[in-house]
Length: 214
Ligand code: BEZ
Image (cartoon, rainbow, N blue to C red; front, top):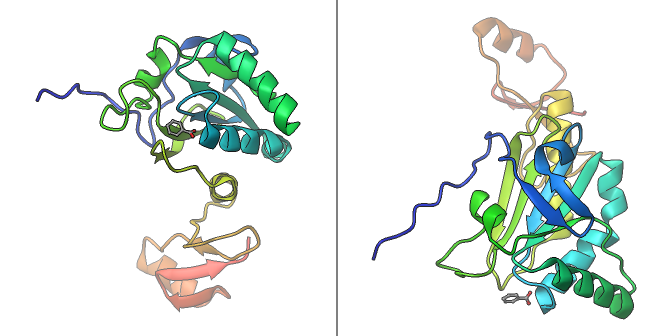
């Protein structure tokens, strides 16, 4: 069977640009993302249960994202009318308002551009993707979940915090890192740096594994 080759954006790539209609009007993505962090996330379909829990989850925590200088933008392969009806329905039934824009990707243009359409999972619905895009427009982290498993909002926020702390302090973050935990100091690149490190007050397992409070 011939497989359609889909070039997927990767970590470190600049976020591909596009123009799209959203629940908040037309956007040029390169303009939308300029100067702030952006989380672009897809859901398989409006008016479906797992998606409703996830999208209302994003809405409930939007303020936390705003405090982290981060914009939210959703997407599914549905019409703008479907999105509007669903936003209204979720507001009525759950009392939660999805204020962030949701892209109506009815022609699948953006889904294909971002590798959200994964035919082995579904030919017609986007998988549950999350793209973390930094203020210069670079893709920094990507998550893909299948149709039948909802994402974890705490992990999305933790990953964003980790990216921001890593950038600010030039450190790496270990397994299960949470804000307030020590961070990993990048390994020394020269013998001199290694000797310097041995004299430091870092928490040190060995010269290549050292932690400090940030
Ligand atoms: C859901 O959100 O519940 C869902 C959507 C598409 C396929 C399976 C589940």
